[in-house]
Structures are given as C-alpha cells and as structure tokens.
Amino acid sequence: MSEPFYYDDFEDDGPIEWADPAIRRNYEAALGRLILAHNEVDRNLTILIQRCLKELGDPTALKSMTTGNFASRLSNLGTIKELCPKLPLGGIDIDGLSTLNGERNVVAHGHFEQNPYDGDFVLIRAKQQFQDFSSHRLDKITEALGVQNGQMGAIIAFGFVPVM
Image 1 (cartoon, one colour):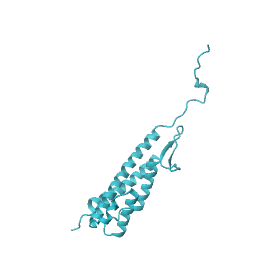
Image 2: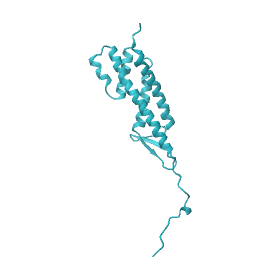
Image 3: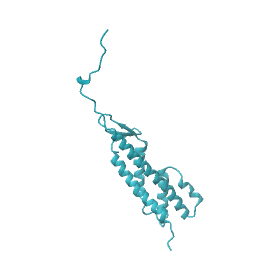
Image 4: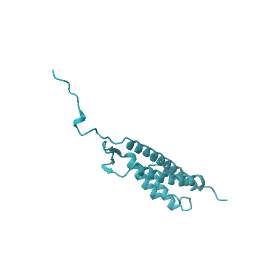
C-alpha cells in the first residue's frame, strides 16, 4: 500500500493572490446609489409631465405622454419644453438626462465580469465591453442625477405656483 499523497505548496510559485473583494462590494454599493437616484429622477419625470399637462388643461390627446420608458417620457418633456416656453422647464437639461440615462442603462443591464486575480473588471452589454465604469464614475453619475433631480423637485414644488 502506498503512502497517502499530501499536496505541498512550498514547491509552487507561492500562494495565489486573489483580488480584493472590496472592489466588487464598492461597485455594488455605488451601483445601488446610482439606481436609487435614477429611480427618483424617473418618478419626478412622470410627475413633472403630469404637472405640465395639468397647466395645459389636461388635454386627453396628450395623456399618453406620461407613459412609456424613460427615454420616451424624456423626449415628451423635451417636446413640451420646446412648444410651451412659458412653462418653468428652463432648468431641465434634456440632453444631459438622456446621457445619464444611457450610462445608467449600461451599468444596470451590463454584466460585471471581474478578473479574480488582479480585480480588473469590464461590463458586458449587448456584445460590447465597457472598461470605464469605476465606482468613482458611478458616484459622479449619481451626483449628476442628484443635481437634475433637485432641479426637477424645485420645479414640481414651486415652479407652478401662480405669481400674484
């Protein structure tokens, strides 16, 4: 009977260096903050369109402007902004929100693929790879969403108050 084999890792290249698990945890936390901020902007977008339509007399033909995906509703708000310059929508950056929504879509729907050894990661979405969405960048997107949300919230709260 032979002796049992015991693995001896003293003869290999040393212990395996694994990526710091904080890389993924920090990314998950930043992604969560971004999703929450975007959801708030999304909700305020619909409320803002509803308020605009109310100011326009609630035309039945325009009720569908509050439905659809974010991009459609944002486009609808852009149309209202352009056609009704007297409504208090000047501070809403339609193009900026469109860009932020595109970035949100990449991170919300992209698969997080991390190298288990060095920690580098990419997001894979629709056969595209994105390497430039660090936790820091996600926090910057979240900040930009917060600025837009603040503007929308102020308009919702105070923009439609009749001036005496």
